[in-house]
Image (cartoon, rainbow, N blue to C red):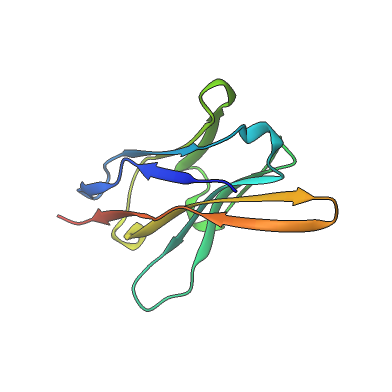
Length: 119
């Protein structure tokens, strides 16, 4: 079992910045994938940024150049720095991880943190 706890969401004006944090209940180095998804009202949940196999990073095209994912293995925490925020970035942001036990994969989600970009 992995517990993921997000923090750092809130209300920000367009062009502003926020940093999200996701604290995991165990070592993030053991996780195959860890990162961030988001879900806007009426839309499907979508990938924002993830680490895979510890080093490979994927970003959604819509956030490239504006968002940066990073990690602190000592704190078992992953961060999402979000700059130049746009109203279309408004969503609930979820921390996600996938682990494997043998060939079986397990997906874990945090409770989500609301990000609202509005003037």
